Length: 100
Image (cartoon, rainbow, N blue to C red):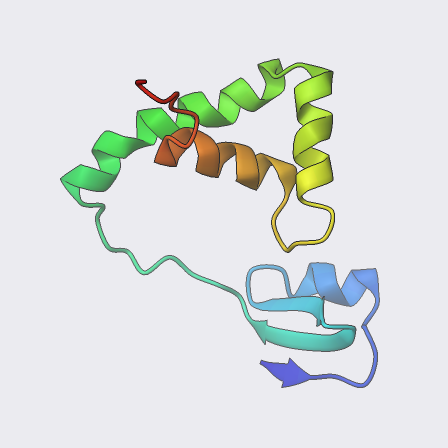
């Protein structure tokens, strides 16, 4: 990552597309080499979990506005987005009711 004095124009950014990535990091204009896939194949365990992530991600759109607003209220003072809280709750199973 290299710090640049000021953000370059759109034409320059488009010209380096696929080679260099320009963005702001903590309010500072920076440039880095374009991210690439490592080319590693996925493990069978991660492939088996993909349907769960897909279902949870698609379920976010079906959540009622009232519940969605509650997630937004939770995330106001933290670094996670409301959808992140929803996904975390779905995948880790925090929505289990007590058996008593």
